Length: 75
Image 1 (cartoon, helix red, strand yellow):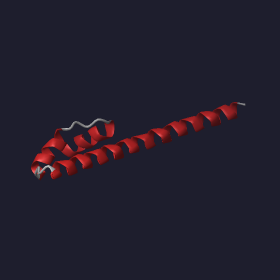
Image 2: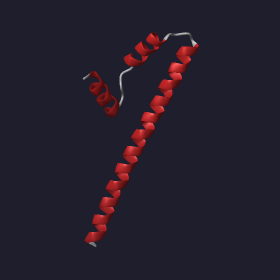
Image 3: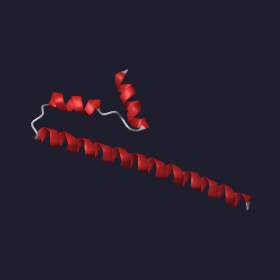
Image 4: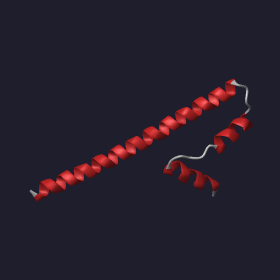
């Protein structure tokens, strides 16, 4: 009986970990897609690369991984 509980606990932890990782990846992919669409729209409006870079860099990162990546790039 104890072994069954341990297996269920480990399986639950593994499922939560996998779901968390997958949802994080999906979120980042969606954000990158939206950012690419924004850049494409700004190019269609005639903005130059410097203006686009200024807009994209002004957008604050929303999740932990993006904030960490921004900190590492600044170092």
